[in-house]
Length: 167
Length: 137
Image 1 (cartoon, each protein chain N blue to C red):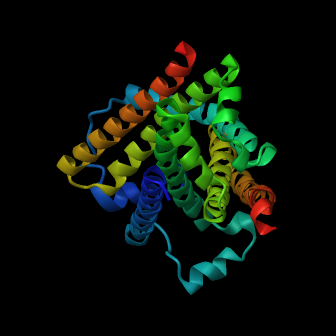
Image 2: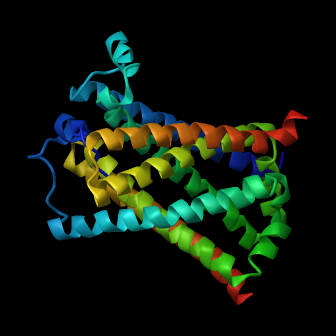
Image 3: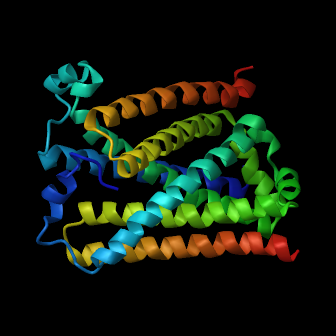
């Protein structure tokens, strides 16, 4: 492993730790906030009701939006730096780029895809709520749709991304 | 960035009284519009970028020769620069609010928000210089 590759790996670990730290702050804030129930058996019981009745999902969509947005931004910070290497030296850029094709990085890219998909689809839903002044029930149906589409497109994309290393 | 029922951050941490009034209502409204516009733009730019570099092309084949070929076109240079600017503006505005929600101390809040602005500025300059060098040869 070359120096620049080692630096990239360290920076990537720092990004992952920052995301875990931020997510902890958000979830801890949710527990402290008391604006609704936290993850308890009672909440999980309510979660299996019909989508229109689950008021809690609005809050959890908000937290997921925040955490996914932070995660994408954290990766963006690293990505701007590794693409910046291209301007410095093509050889250094290619050294770091080689890592992107490895199995662990491909797994990371799948996670990134899920994050981008949820943040994008939920963001478009928020835009639709703001512009069209949608009813709460409609907004929750759109959230279910955004979640389902995230899972489906994320899994399909993950198959494409992981296929080269699955043999 | 607010969704219905998501008031916990406002209630739990700083509280309405402690909230700084540095940003006026009009400026907040402009930021709100900016976040929506850049978000809409990014839904195309980022998904398009990810699809090109991970789905349509295997990521192992996106080395410097791929970048050189792609950045031979002004459209892709404009795409990438616009994506950089929009993502940094959108992300900075989002994390700015998150910092307000989770940092009750005004001094610490100001420090973190300055650090965020500094990070965004550095990334903007670094990305813009990378693209400018390609344009200028």
